[in-house]
Image (cartoon, rainbow, N blue to C red; front, side):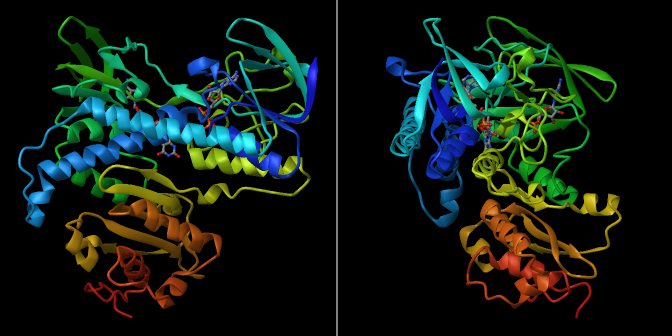
Length: 478
Ligand code: FAD
Ligand code: AMP
């Protein structure tokens, strides 16, 4: 047994490394254990988010959007670019460079905060003892007053479409194709499927998305989901709802995918297939049976509202626990746990976590959706405003979409906001601030929004809640 720490954190993703930095800032002696390693056996920090998730996907989304602009939209601005070429290897190299800059940044931050980084696969035993197996198979044991499990998640698999890493890939494989597939199938029209499908569609692939559910983006506000579906269809994304994949046969030239659709069986040929059917918590081998840690019925580590597990002194944060599988949710849980270990009564407002789909345009939302308010019997007011009536959106040629704001019918307090359109993620973040400050739509109505900006759509939607929008004809005027 060696090195008793105040806190040991298992996993260096956005949940684990942020928790480690905050623990160290609070003066706690802190270690992070990470099983992935890269060159010279150096730990590969940053987890899914930095290595194979948020960051590389956004790098490719931004590169592919620039290609789409160059091959299409720039001419609308009166700009001719001649022949546009595509260098996939160059695009991938740029993505890798961004990833290594950011993972290197995390390494530097941990070092400068005095966090000890240990490479190896960790398992929590009883009594907050942690066994760490190195790549060479050596086992070291550490103890700590507090242990934080932040082991994250991995792509979910489905039996009909096993991953072969060539023709059939998961999200990680889809971030490093070496050529644009002519015809690309995507199983699952959720957040990850839509983002990766968009990347390859913009680069020239014919993309067909097969989604088992009949409803598109069921967790988003229904009006925003319906508007998004229309915009994606206009862009040429072929999204087939009610299409449940039952098999995928790989051969020398491609993959034949069978699925059921409206009581009939259909088979489609693709060059490649992305399986994007969700993610599962990475709990296997993470804790021993006598560690005291338990899992819930869906396989997530069981925690209370403050991320404490059933084992004394053991916490769990990020994708391995309930709640949305989002980097910012895990990071804020990491901060909350660090503060609580330090003795502060920190908490996290799970009601106000923004969710974003980084398509073009973006789709984003926070707080209650209209269908949730209806099912909860809450009396509410709604205001919507289309980007087509926003000067800046016209100037940018980004007129698709709308902003929607929901508020309590009596108190006018803002309960939710949902956007599909340009800068949706940043506009929804304005409403995150508003909700946290308990603002009403009247507060937003009285604020001055810069002109011409996309955020004027937020102002107008807030005005529209009371039939007072200026740049459209309101149904009910007040
Ligand atoms: P992870 O990031 O998965 O990190 C866990 C770490 O723990 C890993 O490094 C792993 O190697 C290590 N580990 C696991 N077990 C052990 C063990 N036993 N011992 C030692 N180390 C261990 N989220 C967003 O908010 N915005 C986005 O735009 C976004 N885009 C995404 C795009 C894609 C393609 C994918 C796949 C995900 C995306 N996500 C996004 C989700 C986001 O990546 C995750 O929510 C986030 O990474 C979870 O953080 P985490 O720290 O809980 O786990
Ligand atoms: P998300 O959880 O947002 O990443 O979305 C994953 C999507 O994959 C969900 O909408 C699921 O309905 C969908 N899905 C899961 N299994 C299948 C399947 N066999 N065929 C088609 N879609 C599926």
